[in-house]
Length: 125
Image 1 (tube, rainbow, N blue to C red):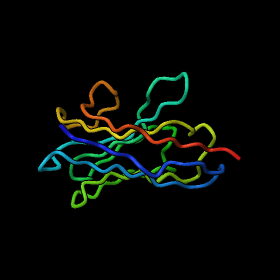
Image 2 (image 1 turned 45 degrees about the horizontal axis):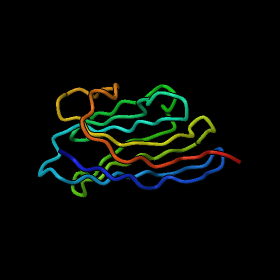
Image 3 (image 1 turned 135 degrees about the vertical axis):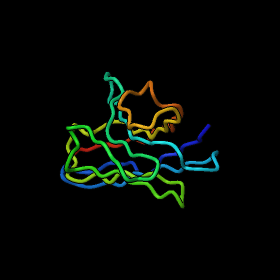
Image 4 (image 1 turned 90 degrees about the vertical axis):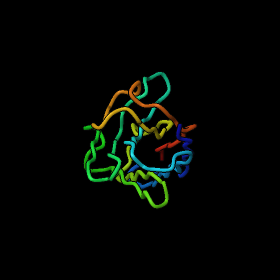
Protein backbone atom coordinates (compact mmCIF):
# COMPACT_ATOMS: atom_id res chain seq x y z
CA UNK A 1 0.00 0.00 0.00
CA UNK A 2 1.12 3.55 -0.79
CA UNK A 3 0.28 6.56 1.35
CA UNK A 4 -0.23 9.75 -0.67
CA UNK A 5 -0.43 13.35 0.52
CA UNK A 6 -1.22 16.20 -1.89
CA UNK A 7 -0.35 19.87 -1.47
CA UNK A 8 -0.18 23.06 -3.51
CA UNK A 9 -3.81 23.80 -4.21
CA UNK A 10 -5.36 27.23 -3.80
CA UNK A 11 -7.16 30.13 -5.42
CA UNK A 12 -5.79 31.46 -8.70
CA UNK A 13 -7.07 33.84 -11.36
CA UNK A 14 -7.88 32.63 -14.87
CA UNK A 15 -4.69 32.37 -16.90
CA UNK A 16 -2.61 31.77 -13.80
CA UNK A 17 -0.51 28.79 -12.75
CA UNK A 18 -0.28 26.35 -9.86
CA UNK A 19 1.99 23.43 -9.08
CA UNK A 20 0.57 20.49 -7.19
CA UNK A 21 2.74 17.99 -5.32
CA UNK A 22 2.00 14.51 -4.05
CA UNK A 23 4.36 12.89 -1.54
CA UNK A 24 4.33 9.10 -1.53
CA UNK A 25 5.43 6.75 1.22
CA UNK A 26 5.02 3.16 2.28
CA UNK A 27 6.83 1.30 -0.50
CA UNK A 28 10.52 0.57 -0.93
CA UNK A 29 10.46 1.01 -4.71
CA UNK A 30 8.75 3.20 -7.32
CA UNK A 31 7.52 0.42 -9.61
CA UNK A 32 4.03 1.79 -10.00
CA UNK A 33 2.27 4.21 -12.30
CA UNK A 34 0.75 7.36 -10.87
CA UNK A 35 -1.89 9.82 -11.97
CA UNK A 36 -3.83 12.94 -11.15
CA UNK A 37 -7.62 12.92 -11.14
CA UNK A 38 -10.03 15.71 -10.34
CA UNK A 39 -13.61 15.96 -9.20
CA UNK A 40 -15.86 18.99 -9.44
CA UNK A 41 -19.09 19.30 -7.42
CA UNK A 42 -21.83 17.15 -8.90
CA UNK A 43 -19.49 15.46 -11.36
CA UNK A 44 -17.67 12.16 -11.52
CA UNK A 45 -13.98 11.88 -10.78
CA UNK A 46 -12.08 12.29 -14.05
CA UNK A 47 -8.59 11.45 -15.24
CA UNK A 48 -6.29 14.43 -15.74
CA UNK A 49 -2.80 13.02 -16.37
CA UNK A 50 -0.79 9.87 -15.75
CA UNK A 51 2.86 8.88 -15.71
CA UNK A 52 4.66 5.56 -15.78
CA UNK A 53 6.97 4.32 -13.03
CA UNK A 54 10.16 5.65 -14.67
CA UNK A 55 8.60 8.91 -15.85
CA UNK A 56 9.33 8.07 -19.47
CA UNK A 57 5.72 7.89 -20.60
CA UNK A 58 2.87 10.25 -19.89
CA UNK A 59 -0.77 10.51 -20.84
CA UNK A 60 -3.14 13.48 -20.65
CA UNK A 61 -6.82 14.19 -20.89
CA UNK A 62 -7.64 16.22 -24.00
CA UNK A 63 -8.96 19.04 -21.84
CA UNK A 64 -5.52 19.71 -20.29
CA UNK A 65 -3.12 18.85 -23.13
CA UNK A 66 -0.65 21.65 -23.74
CA UNK A 67 -1.49 23.34 -20.42
CA UNK A 68 -0.66 20.76 -17.73
CA UNK A 69 2.55 18.78 -17.24
CA UNK A 70 2.88 15.72 -15.04
CA UNK A 71 6.27 14.66 -13.69
CA UNK A 72 7.77 12.62 -10.90
CA UNK A 73 10.97 12.64 -8.89
CA UNK A 74 11.51 9.08 -7.73
CA UNK A 75 14.46 10.07 -5.55
CA UNK A 76 12.02 12.20 -3.55
CA UNK A 77 9.03 9.85 -4.04
CA UNK A 78 7.06 12.86 -5.22
CA UNK A 79 4.60 13.38 -8.06
CA UNK A 80 3.95 16.83 -9.55
CA UNK A 81 1.36 18.52 -11.71
CA UNK A 82 2.31 21.86 -13.24
CA UNK A 83 -0.86 23.64 -14.30
CA UNK A 84 -0.61 26.66 -16.60
CA UNK A 85 -3.22 28.80 -18.38
CA UNK A 86 -5.80 27.76 -15.82
CA UNK A 87 -9.48 28.14 -16.64
CA UNK A 88 -12.55 28.35 -14.39
CA UNK A 89 -13.54 24.88 -15.59
CA UNK A 90 -10.35 23.50 -14.03
CA UNK A 91 -11.87 24.20 -10.60
CA UNK A 92 -12.08 20.91 -8.69
CA UNK A 93 -10.56 18.83 -5.93
CA UNK A 94 -7.41 17.25 -7.33
CA UNK A 95 -6.34 13.78 -6.21
CA UNK A 96 -3.18 11.81 -6.83
CA UNK A 97 -3.38 8.05 -7.15
CA UNK A 98 -1.13 5.05 -7.63
CA UNK A 99 -1.74 1.92 -9.69
CA UNK A 100 0.11 -1.26 -8.73
CA UNK A 101 -1.54 -3.74 -11.09
CA UNK A 102 -0.95 -2.42 -14.60
CA UNK A 103 1.97 -1.63 -16.88
CA UNK A 104 -0.03 0.79 -19.03
CA UNK A 105 -1.25 4.20 -17.83
CA UNK A 106 -4.90 3.73 -16.95
CA UNK A 107 -7.58 6.42 -17.13
CA UNK A 108 -10.31 4.81 -15.03
CA UNK A 109 -10.40 5.59 -11.32
CA UNK A 110 -11.33 1.99 -10.53
CA UNK A 111 -7.91 0.85 -11.79
CA UNK A 112 -6.06 2.81 -9.09
CA UNK A 113 -5.31 1.32 -5.71
CA UNK A 114 -4.33 4.16 -3.40
CA UNK A 115 -5.54 7.75 -3.20
CA UNK A 116 -4.58 10.95 -1.45
CA UNK A 117 -7.03 13.11 0.47
CA UNK A 118 -7.26 15.72 -2.29
CA UNK A 119 -6.37 19.39 -2.63
CA UNK A 120 -8.78 22.13 -3.74
CA UNK A 121 -7.99 24.17 -6.84
CA UNK A 122 -10.23 27.16 -7.50
CA UNK A 123 -9.85 29.27 -10.63
CA UNK A 124 -11.80 32.49 -10.31
CA UNK A 125 -11.41 36.21 -10.75
